[in-house]
Length: 199
Image (cartoon, rainbow, N blue to C red):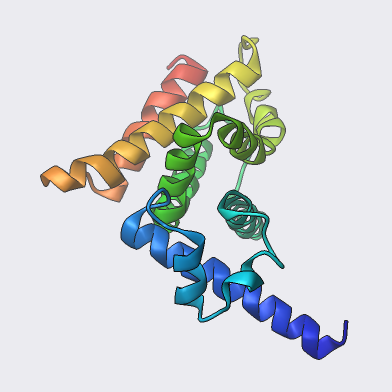
């Protein structure tokens, strides 16, 4: 494949991903069809299958892209520290998660909808997100007391963060109830630090 054809293929893939993001935000994952995505991207329907086997694979690709972007941002942030015995470290990680979820709200809602509609896809998406768990487990090694199963703790932390973000960034705003970013981050950081460090 010549470089021009490679560039065209990369451009088509990027256009399909961007169209999917916009449509997921507008009408949700479940209500978005492949033909909607290709029409919004200005591409022929057949071109979709040159890049993705289906809508599920496109969502997986979006999630991988989002997490890689987040990893790069984390690695470049000098404020990052691993020691979860410090509330400043817990708060930093909570803030990164909250801001990531907020910045990628359509995709995060799509992940939730897709997982409910297709449990096997949900497992694959969960595995993509769980690949960072081994890195996070190291953060618990700084705590003063021996910890119960660290994987259980990290999964509980992830469930708390995801559930709270979904409630306050997706569900409750529809009824007019909101929470500021700072208040949400402080609340979550305090709960997690108290749970991890016992104080």
